[in-house]
Amino acid sequence: MLDDMLDYLEHLREQPVWQPLPQAVRDTFRQPLDNDPADLAAVHDTFMKTILPYAVGNTHPGFMGWVHGGGTPVGMLAEMLAGGLNANLGGRDQAPVELERQLVQWVRKLFAFPETAGGLFVTGTSMANLISVLIARTVQLGKDVRRKGMAASKLRLVAYTSASAHISIAQAMDIAGIGSDALRMIPVNSHYQMDVDALAKTIAADKKAGLTPFFIAGTAGSADVGAIDPLDAIAELAGREKIWFHVDGAYGALAILATDMAPRLEGIERADSIAFDFHKWGQVPYDAGFILVRNGQHQLDTFASPAPYLMRETRGLAAGSPWPCDLGPELSRGFRALKTWFTIKVYGAEKLGHIISNTCALAQHMKQCIESTPQLELLAPVALNIVCFRYRSLDADRINADIVIALQESGIAAPSTITLQGRLAIRAAIVNHRTTASDIDALIDATLGFGEIAENNSLMTQAREK
Ligand SMILES: Cc1ncc(COP(=O)(O)O)c(C=O)c1O
Image (cartoon, rainbow, N blue to C red):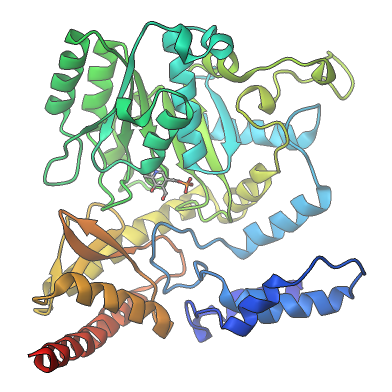
C-alpha cells in the first residue's frame, strides 16, 4: 500500500488531473453489506481500481479548482502513524494532547496572540467560524444563553461581514440560532475588500434601531478572488464599538508564514479570533482546520460541559484539565495535530512560506499571460493566488462554463467557475506546492483551444437555428 501511494504521488503528472467515474465503477459502490471477510489484498486491489483513479485530483499540479490543498507524502505517512495509534484527542493525560498544545503555542506566536489564547484543531474553517460565532454570542449574552437559548434574551444580535465572505459565516449564524438574516453583508470596493465606512454606517444604523451588534468577520483571502479586507481598520472600529472581531483566514491567514505576504495581513494580530486551515496553503492532508481565540477563558465558557463520566483528576489518565473537548463542540477527536507537526517539522515553516509566495507569483504569471492574450480577459484583481478570467465571446457565460467542463474532462487542468458581478468566470486557485509555470501555461493553452471549439460550435448552432 505504501509503495502504491508513494508511486501515485511520484507519478501524478502522468495521470489526468481528474476523470469521470464510469457507470460500471459507480455501480460497484451500490453493493449490499458484506457479511463475510474478504482478503485484504483483494480489497486493496479494488481501491486501486475503483477509488484512487477517480478522486477529485487535488494532489495533481494541474488542479486549481475551489481552494483545495495538495497534501504531501510526509503528511500521508503521519496519517498512517496517527491511524495506528488511534488516538482520541478529546482529552486525558497523553502526549498527543501535549503535541496539539505545542501546535497551539506555535500558532499563538505566529499571530502574536497572548499566552492565554485558546486554540483547537477542527475539521475546517466552516467549523472554526461557527465556534467563533458561538463564543461571541456567549460573550455578548453571558453564559446563561447556553442553558436558556436565544429566546430568553431580549437583545436582537446582528453581525457583519463583507459581501464577498464565505457562506459558512451565514451558516454559522443560522446554526447558532441567531439566523442568517441577522448577518449584514457589507458592500466591497473594486478590490473586493470590505468597505469599512459602510460597515461603520451600518453599525450606527443598527444601534439606532435598537439592535445589538456583536460580531464582525473580516476575511483574509476571500473565496471569490482572494481579497484581504482592511483588517487593521476593522480592528479599530470593532475595538471602538466593543464588537467581537473575527478573521476568516481559511487559506489566507497562513500568508503570515511568507515574509513578502505577511505585511498584507496587518491587523490580524488584533483579532479576537482567527479561523484558518492547515489543509489549504499549509499543505497538510485533509482535514486540519484551526480556531485561535485571544481569550481562552471565553472559549471554555462557551463549550466546557462537565459530565460525571468526564471527571478530572490531578494525577492518572484523567489529569491535564482543561481538555480539548472543553474548547469546542467535539468530544471524540482525531490526531490532526500529528500530520501538521510532521509537515512543519520536516519541511520547516520557512519552506511553507516560500510555497505560499510561489503560488502568488504563479498567479501573477497567469495574470500576465491573460493580459497579453487578446482572446482572454481578466475579471478581477489578483491579490494573492486566485485568478478569475474568461474567454472573450458574445455568449461568454455559456462558453466559459463549457470550457471549464472541457478542461476538467480533458484531464489537463481543473479550475472551477464563479459568477462575479453577474459574469461567469473561470477561476483558478493555485494552492498546491507541486504546481509550476508549465501547469499555468497548459491551462491557458487548453482554454484557448477549447474556447475556439466552443465558439465554433456555438456559431454553428446559431447558424442552424437561423
Ligand atoms: C474564505 C473561506 N472561508 C471558509 C472556507 C471553508 O473552509 P472549510 O472548507 O475548511 O470548511 C473556505 C473554503 O475554501 C474559504 O475560502
